[in-house]
Amino acid sequence: MINKVEICGVNTSKLPILNSEEKKILFDKIQQGDEEARQKYIYGNLRLVLSVIQRFSNRGEYMDDLFQVGCIGLIKAIDNFDVSHQVKFSTYAVPMIIGEIKRYLRDNNTIRVSRSLRDTAYKALQAKERLMEEKSKEPTIDEIAKELDMTKESVVMALDAIQDPISLFEPVYHDGGDALFVMDQVSDEKNADAIWLENISLNEAIHRLSEREKRIVSLRFFEGKTQTEVSEEIGISQAQVSRLEKSALKHMRKYM
Image (cartoon, rainbow, N blue to C red; front, side):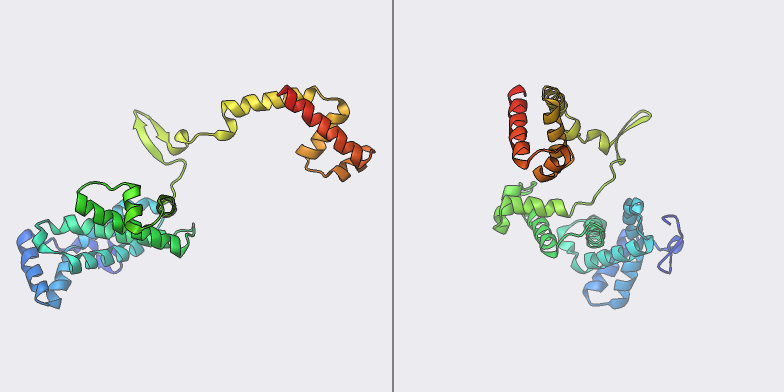
């Protein structure tokens, strides 16, 4: 899909390339309200959109859809570009195109995030951009929260919610022939040393109980049965089950 020549009816192999002088002349006309110059400027920068959507080729999205969304970002960049900043148009446009595509991917993500949470996240991102412009450095979460008059926890939760999910098999580092995947950096809390030792201790404690106590503990805590169900199964009263259960737990706690 990424190598297709025609996207949304546009033959990408025949897209024009504007030089700096042509861009300047066209942009001067755009500022005077020349719609034909605007269309030429858009068409002359479609290769920029193509280069950006290459980054999202592994998302399983239709490239035609991403191209259209990228074009919206390009048009927004043209309409908001300020030549007085003395920066190249591509330097300004690329983040705008990427931002538009990311918003599209977030809004169409299979993992649904509430509208209020997304709105908070977008406000936080806008506040982050403002603070970066003012202070010329990356703002902290505390600074962003203060700017929005929100708690730090709310900002962190909102920003985390709009992060794109990645596969556990996504490679994060290559060293020679072997790749290090995301799953290699995720800890397994269920198999931690402390849990492993605790399970050994629990098994040893259970082995020290009488056969009847073992049976009651197994039925109650491993099979999830009520004391009444246990009493019916082993043929004793519910009060006896309760007494034996408490005694068994007391002995186990003492051992562990």
